[in-house]
Image (spheres, rainbow, N blue to C red):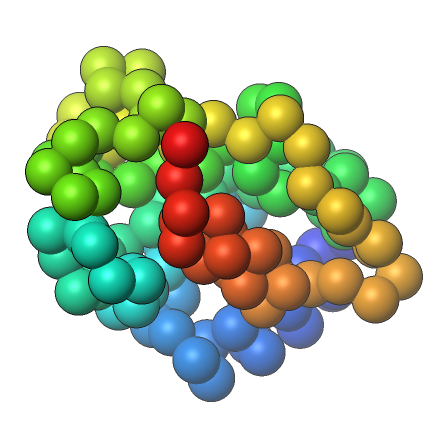
Length: 123
């Protein structure tokens, strides 16, 4: 993992959201993430496990899982990409199969913009 790049990207993301990096640099928690209309919350916290080879490997794919609050619902239902009981207590895994990621130009801000776009019309 490129720790210098990770810390730079976290610093930039922290200008938009409150961000906490865990002690071993394997995950971040992002607070006050604004949700699109239709959800039972206006904002949530998101837990993101970071890929071992960040930024060469994109966040949100494989073992670099994205977790949202287990109680999150879209228009009263659990979205198809949402998997309860597959994350830490109180969290649910939001499944991504792939994302369009360029490690030379994309960063954590890009990832959270992609996540918001995906959340706009969940399956």
